[in-house]
Length: 522
Image (cartoon, rainbow, N blue to C red):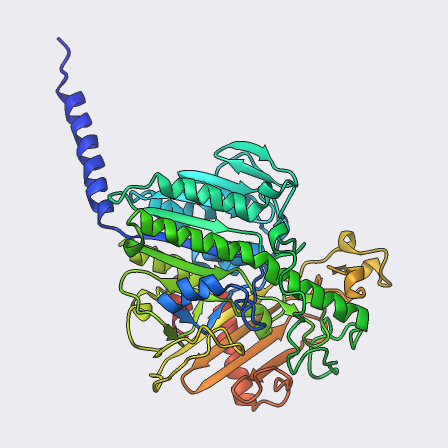
């Protein structure tokens, strides 16, 4: 006679484990992350998103000192998903050779993302939109219950989605506009969610990335808007003020390049209107389903963007405030309305914060710090955000004395350029290994093989500085006191006291080698 007791006992244990997981999960909050692409905050990139300002910023917390860890898409997204600096996850630029959806990512880092940790703890998990630039795969990454990943870099029409392991090609019909398709996929996912089972949804629309294609219904908006003429707009740099790539000709920018900048600026705003509509639709649906009160919503971007600053036409990849600052808004349980937080954060902090919200322990190899207690407290906060200001998206309507805080964040980038990225239509040499040299930018190249640097972004209640070292033939150094010089016009790198420069250089070396908790001591 066969003894059925072991089989019965095994099945009972699995059943108990299943219901135990469901009971624990039922008490957890829902989490939604909206991740835009190349959206600046310094150049008023939040201004066109009036619905988002009303429904998120005015109902939650806005971090006014939020930074990317790497001002380029793939490394920044890898950092957001893993909570690690690029030197630890080893995705250092947008190329496959630079680790963007390379073997290291697929075999190691994809097993250590916050969506996977949440799925393992009872969450339904959803992803729709841009993943990593070199993702062209039928494989669904681990950690997702419902997957709609974009093949490759941002597009608005004529793209392919991997929809739960099935490739689907989209064309150029109005209803195939990518942001709208992502919105419909999110709406379907939300409609299937139940109050007793938590969910995570990550939505990554293409806006405001090139080719800056707005939905047809938004093409007539902002026709009289021009790029923000900041004090550093079209300012020509000398040999001691900026590293060599910034000083490339043409400088100053020609009228036709400035006209192109104005056009791109308008189009970037236009592309964000569909994201604004997505957010409004999402919040209305959450309320109809009685899910809103138990849902954290995070809105941010992978990096910022410059348009004409220091006579650089348009791109990211540089260590200036336009490129490294990102919008960052959080709403959810326990978060006060119209809360403006000065405490500095990095994209690497999102993963540990989400794990904190979900009641999941943070792995020791995560470099970031949870800001869950910061965003739920009155510390490091200004009273209110004024969402009607035309001068700034985050200007407080009233202020209180800011408490003391201090943090040093790492900004790192590895230049990308080879003989294959040379543009034969531009008057440069193939052996220079330049990259992103385009005719609409007057052949001013945005990247090169040695556009490599590390920076310490140092913010405290009484200081605001950045110190950068470039790994190039000049051994260039740039440093700025942003309290005195918010537009980074005066490079102090060669005029600092030797003691201050050596201290920052030492801290930078340690940050570039840090891992886990050792990244949090500065």
